[in-house]
Amino acid sequence: MDLSGCGAAITGGAGGLGEAVARHIAGAGGTVAILDLDDKGAGLAEELGGTFHKLDVTDAPACARILATVAEGHRLDLMVNCAGVAPAARTVGRDGAHDPALFARTVGINLIGTFNCASAAAAVMAEQDGRGPDGERGVIVNTASIAAYDGQMGQIAYAASKGGVAAMTLPMARDLARSGIRVVAVAPGLFLTPMMTAFPQDIQDRLGAQVPFPARLGHPAEFAALVGHIATNPMLNGEVIRLDGAIRLAPK
Image 1 (spheres, rainbow, N blue to C red):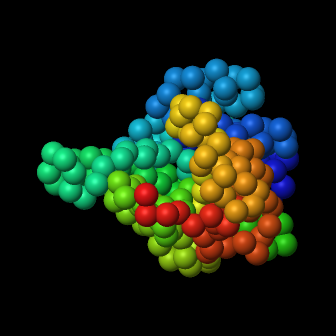
Image 2 (image 1 turned 90 degrees about the vertical axis):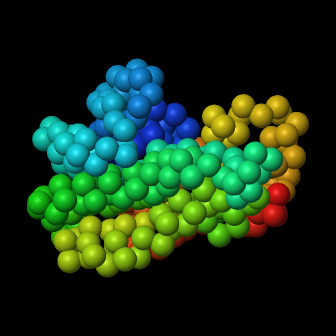
């Protein structure tokens, strides 16, 4: 896939990693559709010459409808799922057992929301003409997390949801292989997202120093660059790629 001229949809594209992906693709000559609940995505879409679609990723019919709309104006070549939440709660905390509604909400957004958009995008892509020597119809990139492997105390819901994203990568890639659609997940480590930048600088510095090399927090543009490479490298398929500077999270 050539990013120049490709049509991409990005959930969570109004900020953080998703915004970086949108900027990277638009900068390479692609067309971006930003899918987010945050209305500031409209301003970003206007800046990048793309479109904004307000979307709750837990609403499967809405995911299918909006992605079909995105494809009407342009091919849907690339689906990037970045929408997510990261609540902190232990299995048993000061107030008793973990709130099951919070657990379900986290899984609903991070895992089921990713599945909703990935499967709806795949249905659209499967109807498109294949391109290039391999007849590729599209690429889906999902966002997992190193918490899928190294979940810390208080990350039970988040780690479970991201573990699900990692686990569905290979079977989804196998399901879609005959349609010429690739599926890859990225498991980022500690990155300078809005959630991270809300911490005081000294805390950010301490967290960055835990990364073996480079000993700093990751930049969203580095995540976006990997997404761009995944899109353009046809042999990357069915894999979860850790992007973490070799860090392995401590228990807390």
